[in-house]
Image (cartoon, rainbow, N blue to C red):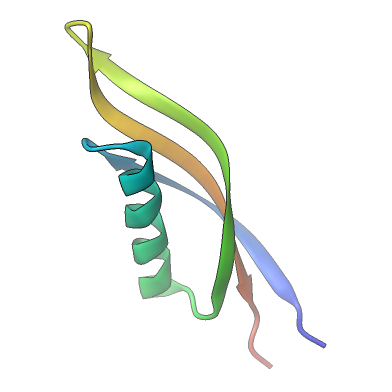
Amino acid sequence: MSVARVTEITAASPVSFEDAIKVGIERANKTLRNVKGAWVQEQTVSVEDGAIKEYHVNMKVTFILED
């Protein structure tokens, strides 16, 4: 039987929401072991001069705790 933990992270990208998710998961994998999934809780954008400047995502990342 395994035990999981959930941590919340925020990531950003000037390209897209999908890229922000990818950046966030890649960064989480550098610190957390056994990352198994993520739930995108919120998506927002930064706007400058009427155009989207940056895409932001808040995610809950699930990882399995080691024994």
